Length: 94
Image (tube, rainbow, N blue to C red; front, side, top):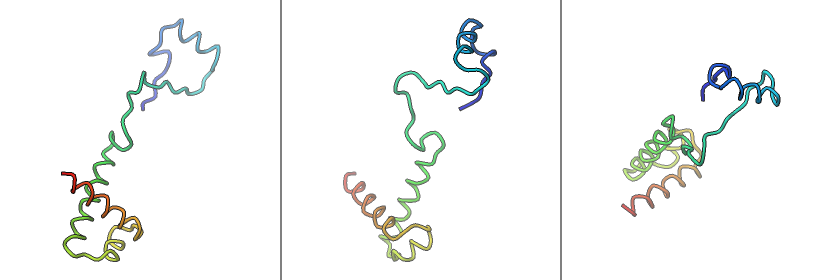
């Protein structure tokens, strides 16, 4: 989300109308409709976590112990178990 100066992008009449309600402060103008990206889609975080989870599952299926995965990825044992179960289920549907 970028900052734009209202006097550079708005018609003079609209700027004056907005100034009746708000003076010199930032205002967020949302996109029209439901055109929103999902969490992590724009910056690649979702893909990074998916790759990490696939790697955790692959290492587990190749014999790495959960306690070693906990140390390697700095996640709780419960989180590692949830990731393994989730990826296993996803792969079962492929």
